[in-house]
Image 1 (cartoon, rainbow, N blue to C red):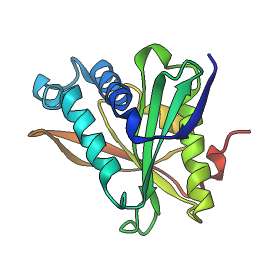
Image 2 (tube, rainbow, N blue to C red):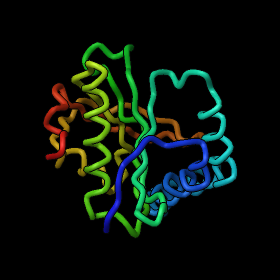
Image 3 (cartoon, one colour):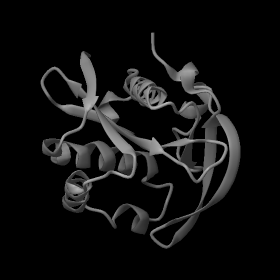
Amino acid sequence: MSYHIRDAICGDTPALADAVIEPILTAFRGRVPDQCLTWLTKDESRANWQKWFQRDRHNDQFLLIAELASHRVVGCALAGASPADPQFHAELILLGVLPGCQGQGIGRQLVGAVAARLLQQGIRSMRVGVLSVNPYRHFYERLGGQYVCEQPYDWNGVMLTETIYGWTDITCLLIG
């Protein structure tokens, strides 16, 4: 599968909704109550991404997408500076890859591209929060993420546990 990673643009909002919601539904259906999965529709997601693009500043965040040669968006990563955390100066906020495209290195490439962008900004450490029931959370361990802690997470009124992983030096995430 041939794809490239680029900065997302406002015209990507319909595809972003798919690249976020489909992986969530696949990962969590049967693992969390339905109220966690039905609160956000693709239309609402598209509207939220539209608002994100329309803001003058994105709170030091950036959004990357993985796109096939056919221009089909198959994954995305949202990340940015996290000045409130003294140990980790950035956060991987969101990573999504369409279910049919998982296991092909796209998520790894997106995380590597996030690390490269952060390093360009002079940021060398990053964290990510992953719901503990996420069957794919060990992906971050395979990328060298170190367990930091667990904390409560409220997902639409359902209290769950979130596992935090971190990298004190994200150069290990760079690809090739």
